[in-house]
Amino acid sequence: MKDSITIVLSGEAGQGLQTVEEFLVESLTQECHVFSSKEVMSRVRGGNNTATIRISNEPIQALRYTADLVFLFNDHAIERLIPRLTPKSQIIGEEGFLSDDLKAKYAFTSINFMSIAKEAGNRLYFNTAMFGYILGLLNGSVKFAHNAITKRFEKRGEAVVIGNIAAFDRGYQLGQDSVIKFDFKPNPDFKPMKTTTGNDVLSIGALAGGANYLAAYPMSPGTSLMQLLEAKTNDFGILVEQAEDEIAALNMVLGAWYAGARALTTTSGGGFALMSEAVSLSGMTETPAVIHVAQRPGPATGLPTRTEQADLNLVLYAGHGEFPRMIYAPGRLSSGLELMARAFHMADKYQIPVFMLSDQYWLESIAQTEALKIPRTYGENLITESDRDYKRYRFDESGLSPRSVPGFGKGFVKVDSDEHDEEGLITESFDMRVQMHEKRLNKAKLMEEDIVQPQVVGNKDEKNLIIAWGSTYGVLNELIADKPEWTLMHFEQVYPLPLGLEERLAKAEKIVVIENNATGQFANLLQMTYGIKLPKRILKYNGEPFFIDELEVKFTEVSNG
Image (cartoon, rainbow, N blue to C red):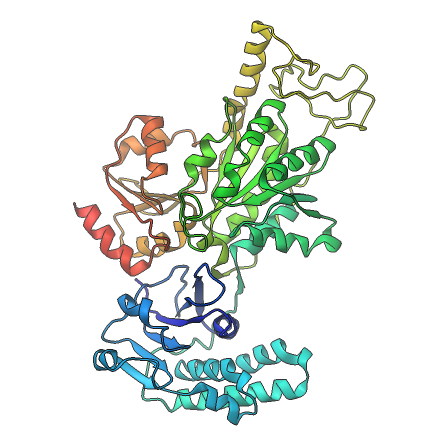
């Protein structure tokens, strides 16, 4: 586990956690490595949310469970954080925010940030005063902080900027003078990197894939993608429509592809459950679709603001009948952009539904990344101009029926949800049924050339394998760093599985599968596909992501067991 400092902010919605978090990330990311994630309760007011910010002079893309610095925004902000405290934890808040019992166990520093704000001219400067104090403790750059404050408040006028900077400066000096000391010093030679989120890269990826239509019904955590693309309507010509429900949303997406658009929908597990029939319609009519499913814990409403990897089975088996599909599950920010763009190309090329499977943690965490490359090869439209004898479901030697759209050529584009012949006319012929069904299923064979291979990190001999997928990449990349005998095999395409995987698994002496769900859904898929046993599993399903210090302990137990 890399040397780092973990800062936890805790308070109710509306008290300014997000402001302090954003200021810290924007400033510190100029001089050290930063990773930040939120934990939000599913209520408007009354429950405490937290923001966890981890900083290091080494690259990090994971959280640590134990907290070094805890900042309390109210007198009940500590309640849910007690398990994260250690004897070295430092708690900071107003007098009265911590009980006498806890003061006897943990180091507590009483600071009235509201008073500092008032001294600077306005009680609303509370957040910038706290920001200043934290940065002062960490010896962070005043220059970067002043720039961040000016950028945030310049539209409100010079007086507001000056007042906030004054509050920051008071807090910063207090932090510098504090008895709380850390060995950490930001690296003066650090090369600043861009901070972004999974939501950001998916929105860019969709535009790179040529998306020009989105239909969705709001459901967290999938809604942010809808909002981000809606903000790009005028710049990129993408039409975003809020459907009356999820059933309508995916059917509208299919109608858009039929008409020649490149369309997607975004939802979460509960919303996608309503789309199942339309997924099957995509399979039968061979109409492309791109479907983003942002996972959260179920069943039913579950924990609507937390994270989990429990919808793989839902996406894998959704829709009645048999038909091919692709499922991507990015773990790196760069691959989130690449795979989202690729999803549109694969949907268009093979005329299938393609799924982008993410989760709340990956979508909403703030991480650093090198400059992202925009893929330029996935926006090509594969629509065929029709002739007078056009047959939508023609048995072509390529194995794929040429897809045209109404108005592009002289042909009539007929599609049907019933079994059909080459022209798209309903048929009751058993022979035609078999031919059509086999043509659709044979796409799985054709797709083999386009399967994304898993990322391999660590020991190249693959004798001791850690297998995982999706959002666990960051924490596992850190875990594997000090385990030279182990190999991380991380999947960003979870279906179809790549050729040659069975042989690689068979050669391994030890395999540990790590997933954010209760049953090991990906491990079960591998067992069912290859007939192997994968009993060693680390599974987490309480609504939280894996923390690096927690995972270190569990991995030692399971791998040695």
